[in-house]
Length: 196
Image 1 (spheres, rainbow, N blue to C red):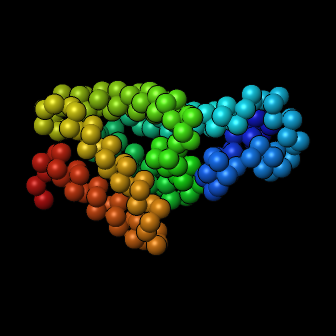
Image 2 (cartoon, rainbow, N blue to C red):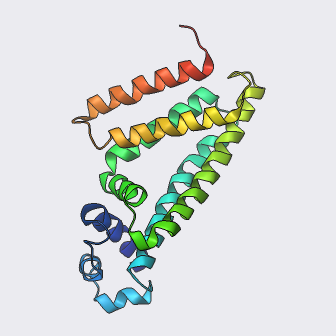
Image 3 (cartoon, one colour):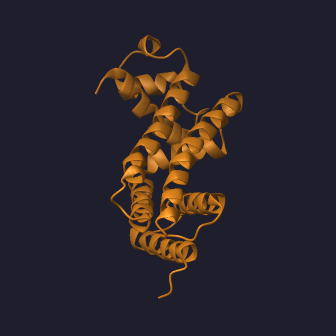
């Protein structure tokens, strides 16, 4: 792993655990195994490190689901379920990443709030555009009722957000799995009008 990547990965963990204000460049340098001035060979400031780390997280999230969303051989139900499961797995297995993401979206450092919000809007728009195409194709295949796409998008994003939030507050993976599976079933039954 190159030094720049190591700096970003280390900073994600530190920002998650200690917050932006509680993390110093010296903390990052120490864990990376370099002297503090060496950080400036890769980043101009702590702000630059944070924004680069967040960019990596947002980009990685969208790229993770791009292949699933654009797979034309998979049904809508299978695709949405796989997104839910991959999202839940990421939230449960990478607590630092989840906490970092949560801190930056809910409690961004004040001087960077505008830039973080802009970044979030940009990546959410990319994700929504991919999802809108998926829902539109599925309507054309009669997998779901033809309707305004926005409620499909909003409800799916709320499901992802709920899973993301619950991953930090449940006491066991078994309980988390039950929450994910139950939420998924209710969601899918609602959008597909399936009758069991």
